[in-house]
Amino acid sequence: MAINATYLGMPLEINDLDVENLEYFKHCAAHDFHLQRCDSCGLLRYPPTTACPWCASPKSTWTRVEGKGAVHSYSEVHHAIQPAFKAHTPYLILLVDLDAQKGKPTADEALRVVGNLATPDGKLAPPEMVRSVGIGTRVRMVFSDVAPGLAIPQWTIDEKAAQPAKPWRYPD
Amino acid sequence: MPLPADVDTSTPKHLRDKYAIVGVGETTYTRGSGKTTRALGSWAVRNAIEDAGLKPSDIDGMLSYQSGDSTFSPMIAGDLGIRLNFYMDVFGGGSSTEALVGMAMGVIEAGMCKTVVIFRAMNGFSQVRIGGTGARAAAPVSGDMLHGRAYGWQSAGQMFSLTFMRHMHDYGTTPAQVAAVKAIHSEHAGNNPKAFYKERVTVEDVLKSRYICKPLHLLDCCVETDNGTALIVTRADRAKDCRHTPALIRGVVGRCNKPRMDMHYQHGPISTVAGHYGKEILWPNAGVGPEDVDITGSYDAFTFTTMLQLEDYGFCKKGEGGHYVSDGTMRLGGRRPNNTSGGHLCEGYTHGLNMVIENVRQLRHDVDDSCPVGPDGKRQHTYDYRPGGCRQVKDVEVSANLGWAMPGTGSAMVMRRG
Image 1 (spheres, helix red, strand yellow):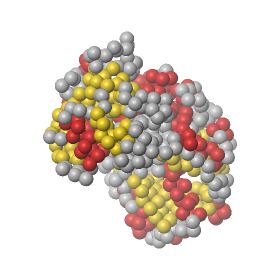
Image 2 (spheres, one colour; image 1 turned 45 degrees about the vertical axis):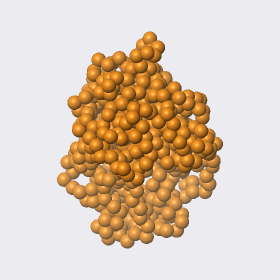
Image 3 (cartoon, rainbow over the protein chains, first blue to last red; image 1 turned 60 degrees about the vertical axis):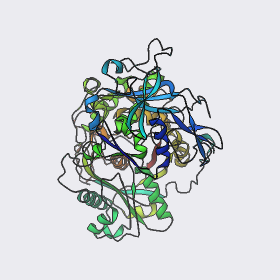
Image 4 (cartoon, rainbow over the protein chains, first blue to last red; image 1 turned 135 degrees about the vertical axis):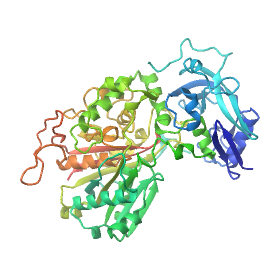
């Protein structure tokens, strides 16, 4: 069923034919991260797609994946374009290498999942937290609840993980 | 499914030098055009037809690209009284420019028409800004966009900047190195009477400008403008009937070689962009290599996009792009000048076409700088590149244009003086 909701004042929509995104966000709404695992070659993929980028098979099974990884790269936004984000600058956009499936199908490959830096309860991170994160920071997935059937996956600092002595930050 | 390294990149070479760009034209680059994109498009196309020494009735094909902000070929053709045998308007950005030149060659080769105009018309400042401000930014976030825009990750700067951040991490590239791209392009724009920004800026100026999104400062970003741009492709043997020395097309590539064109980077290092894959086709088709190229035209939507492209198309080794763009090679008077018009960073943002126009004029040895015009109507170039002076590169024979849209899509073209 179609979803129409509002997040940070932004209208969000998923139409009822978009079964891949409806399924993905349904699991997120249960605070449970799932990705498609190809029924043919067995590889996971992100974001949701209609066929496997590695073997072109259309068949897949939603599989629970642990939302843990390390920051691969980031951008620190000071000039927000989306009106909803103007009140939240600076905010971080993180590209996170999942621990799952690392090194497959080649040494360069990784499941890289996007998200903002957030607090453990899924709110956009305050400035002092933004300043503490860089490439290499260990993060875990949390969720921002939006509506029934829709929560946005986010990243927060993994308090239990061994962190790098100094994550790589853009030199100011 | 084969990985990119296993994909067959061999292509026939018989189109090499068979087609040429014979006319180029543009409008002024402004902020506040006071005109529709249709008026800008017909203005630019008319200028290109006149530049080629052709009549509107000589044109029988038209192609354009846009991202929901332009007009359509049949409208421009109708306004200019042109009867089209073939037309196509595609959704697209900076990786469409050179790819559409390839498409023009294809439709002529197939016998569907004889002479093709390609145009791009945009009120890129006054109406639909690529950065996505205004109504476009406030539009509902739907479907696949939930994996991007819902995170406040939507403007080109926001989307691309992660590639540069990782490049800095992996190779030690510095903000000052890429800031040199803006400084050099501003020197070139200073010798371009039609550039929107003619003022020279320094590396310091770039680094002192406010942050848009780290690692990008305001002056790392291009200048959004209103404009129309156009070029004309025809067979090389028809070019002799045209007004100017033709720019012969050696080879074209339009390549998309990541599993998805979006920004989730499932494939390879994220600072490796489409040019890395495109060069496998570009250089063999052109029959030359980067070392043979006299001038380059990079897609400088941002300072660092120039660096990533020049690196991945092979003008320097991977990881040495920061050095290449800051060591003087790209300057007028340097070994291989880049974006001699000032490019998107200074002349105006056109989605790639203005750098092709510039290279065509460079190959004609007839760049419209401030040098005096002789009795034959041609400029008497001084090759004095000081402020307000010459912009013509001496003895240009071979050029390369490198188009880019997303990191995963790119198109490129090599031309030589006819």
